[in-house]
Length: 114
Image (cartoon, rainbow, N blue to C red; front, side, top):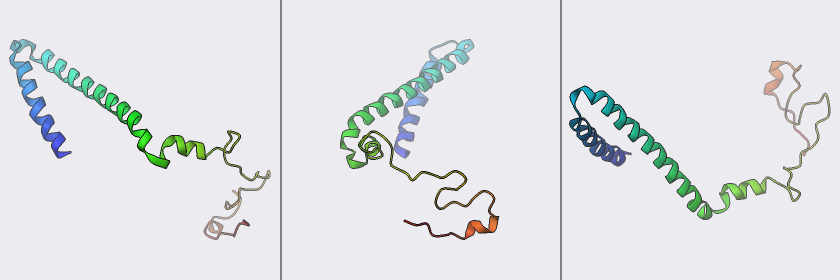
């Protein structure tokens, strides 16, 4: 971060001085605004292009934790998510207390059958 900040300082300050030095004083505001706009748009496009390149070329070396492998692990063989036990109407899921239970019961856990 320090190297990047130093490099940007060495590049942006002289560029602004060249831009403002090449126009008449009454156009300094327009020239400064145009310089800032071009710098911001260029930075946004640069980040978008570099992140696309790194995402495309880096994903094949990411190993087993890449997003495509992780998403395929979440699916069973039929393209569905993991199987869960059905929740009976009027009963909370395992490990949760019913909404009508007192607040102090929230700190006591009842073991759930495995």
